[in-house]
Figure 1 (cartoon, rainbow, N blue to C red):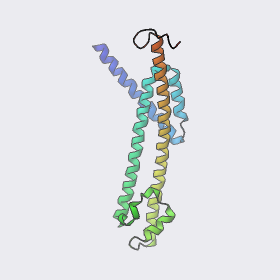
Figure 2 (tube, rainbow, N blue to C red):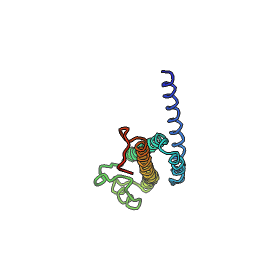
Figure 3 (tube, rainbow, N blue to C red):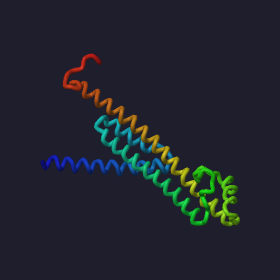
Figure 4 (cartoon, rainbow, N blue to C red):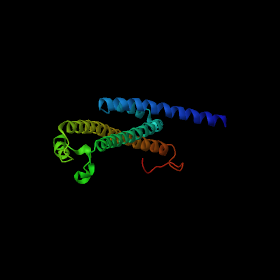
Length: 185
């Protein structure tokens, strides 16, 4: 009983360590806008063979968690900008089809905002700055999400490859049901 508990605790500690290491490596990837730091880690794990499957799964879970966090951040930024505009008295319902702010171009924004309750030039510049910074933030976060999508696909490929290798090794040790499988040789 004690051995099982200790084994469980050690497993949890190992998983937590892998997640922390993955978070650090993913932060480097996002900062550098490159998958190279993660690829180095994954290559080391793949060389260890199927025993690293759990570590790769933990890394993938961290990728999924970070991607969800970035998606939530985009929603927060969008919501904050929308709230700010509404607090300034901009009636967003007047915009045709409620075009998402992140798809508006700054050049066409002035034209749209001039139609909103005759705002002065200073206020229009504030709107433009807000929307420009909002758009820049959303673009940066969208690039990071795309990078994490690429990492997720990369990890998925290696996980499937190692699962296949593991299945082949088990097959070589006596087959799926403990019988030698001779028709694949």
